[in-house]
Structures are given as C-alpha cells and as structure tokens.
Image (tube, rainbow, N blue to C red; front, side, top):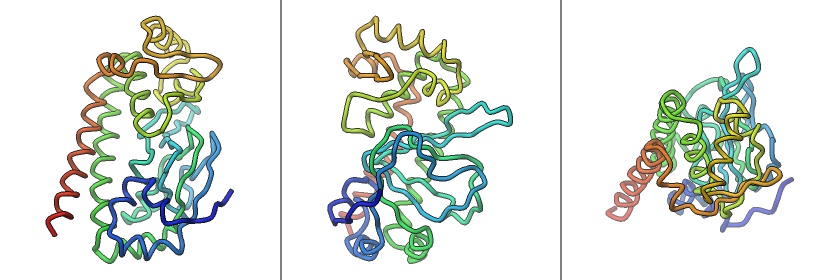
Length: 246
C-alpha cells in the first residue's frame, strides 16, 4: 500500500539521512513510502530488481535457499541499510531472496533513478559504497558465527540486531521462522529461547518475543554482534567527519 511521500521520511533511514540536501531533493519527487507485511518478498532469487528499498520501520532478511528448500539468513537489513545493492554495483539478478521478517514501512525508489544518482559520484555513491562494505562484514561474520557459535549465541546476536533496527522491544516471530533465519532446527531454537527466558532476558509467548533485559543479553552474545555494529559505526562516523570538514 502506497503512502504520501513527505520530506521527513528521508530521515527515517540512516543512509538517506546521510545524503546531501541536494541528493535528497533530486530523489524526493520519485520516492514512495510502502508498507511491507510480514513475509512479503521484495525480490526473489534470479528475479529482476526494478526498485531499491530503504527500510524505515521494517526489517528485511536476505535469505539463501538450497535445492532441498532449507534456508539460512545471509544478512539482516533495517533502517541502517538498503535492499538491492546489486542494482547499483552492476550485478545482474541476485542469487538470494529478500523477505520482510518484521512488518513495517520502507522507502521505495526506482533502481534506474538510484543508478543515475550513483553515477553522479556524489554523496549517494559514497554512502552506498560505505554501506556495502559494512554489509560484506555482516555477511562474512554471519558465516563465521553460524559455523563456530552455539544456537543460543546466534539467537542473542539475531535478537540484538533486530532490536537495534526497530523502535520496540517486541519482535513478532515464531521459533520456526527464527530457525530458518539461523539455519538451524526449530527444536534447537526453542531450547535456546527457553533458556534465555528462564534467565529473565526475554519473554516468549505465541509468536511474540519481548526483550526484557538487553544489558545482560549483550553479555550473553558472541563477539560477532559487536564486530558488525562497530564496523557500521566506524564507517559512518568517518563519513560524518568528512561531511563536517567539507
């Protein structure tokens, strides 16, 4: 469902917020605010990328699906990022699918317009290239985490990443769906979530997970969470310093 576009919506996504006023002005006439329901597929593996999406209140998973139907999350994107990086990096159809795992709003811009603005070698290009580096770090760290860390630690990482990208401590998600994200078994996620609940860190009921004690959840999580978040902050703190000094 489309909503009326307003200038304020650019500030609901951290990448668009980092653009120059001139770049935002050029995009303002073509941006659309859309509502994405839970499970909505933004694009599928091998599909065309007609639009680029900048999440504001939704969270989107980039998922790889094997031939047997099993899935695993490669990356998680919220108001810190963009969905559709291959559209401006010169790639063809993406080898994965992008699915809204937390319902909410996003800003939708034609991929052709993003490519044209990217080609100006201005603030959009700089911001998107910095984000792509941060995304590569997240994908790499996810692969390491899934190989070396327990389901409980991976669940902590996933919950904290989601919490950082939504304005609520409550996440609507079944254990089966989380298992698909983490590339594990539903039973393992149920045991891990039960342990976190017994410790008073989260509360789980009927597909809703509420983060009760974030501070101690951060003590439980593996180093992968902090590595991903620190790299993002490093890249964009550096970007802000450059903009201030211009």
